[in-house]
Image (cartoon, rainbow, N blue to C red):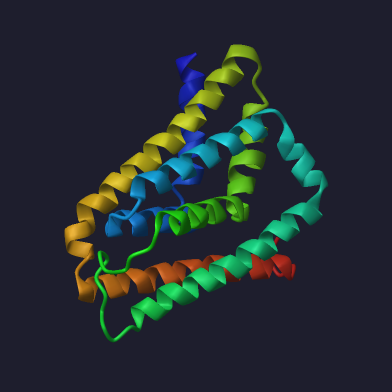
Length: 205
């Protein structure tokens, strides 16, 4: 059944590794070295939950209830705009805070990790609908192997991303560089928000 596990791993890896709100937040927390492992764990658990929901066929339900996805898109758009604003404010800060000085508490980190995971339509489309559609083509042990492979992809990616960010922290955490990291995060968040707005307005499918 290794071949089906590999299929699940590759299918999930391609979708999860795409730059998005989740990845940007995990990177930022890793560079800050602030609650990066709790944040990565939440992203992994949320992905595992949604992958599992997709594997039991919930993707079909979501496709039949487009209003639910619209509501999540609106919530995601608002959050990404606000998060991008705070990142941009840090970018233009004349004090040039380092990553270590840009402190937050554990509660805020956990809430933000949940929001970027649960209010991100990419998560539903990728894990529930797309992976669910692929995985449900199999049955029995083959389907189980695909499911395990997909979850392993999420686990390995966020662990790797956290280690990478933590390793780059001494360099990226310098004041003059950290400002540009915050600026990049702001642009990424606003770019995703713009994409969501275009979908809500029906400009793109």
